[in-house]
Amino acid sequence: MSPDIRRTLADWESWHALTTVSLVVWILARTNRYALLDALHGLVWTAHEILPVIPQARRGQIRPVAAVLVEMWLPLTIASFVCGFFAFHADAESRRRAEGE
Image (cartoon, rainbow, N blue to C red):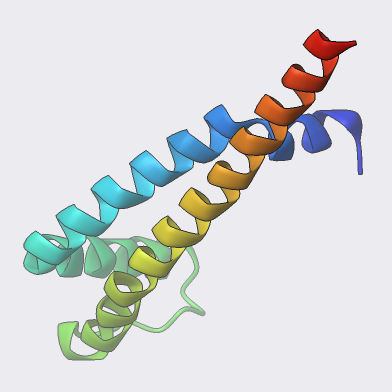
């Protein structure tokens, strides 16, 4: 891995930001399912206009995809929180060791 990617993965602030954003997206998706459905339908329609190979989709076909996205966001939020938790404590431990030397 490149040093930039390694530094980003070890940086707890980026994990905290990902947790915050994914939590907000999950809350919005849970409370505004119709808005999410409209946004996904608009995305599919735009993709069909750009690439006619992509088939048009009705809202009924998009509803299961929206349900999976809503259910997927909470585990993503929890996983990013756990990764950030371990990154924060690893950073704190390395700083404590550096101050002790």
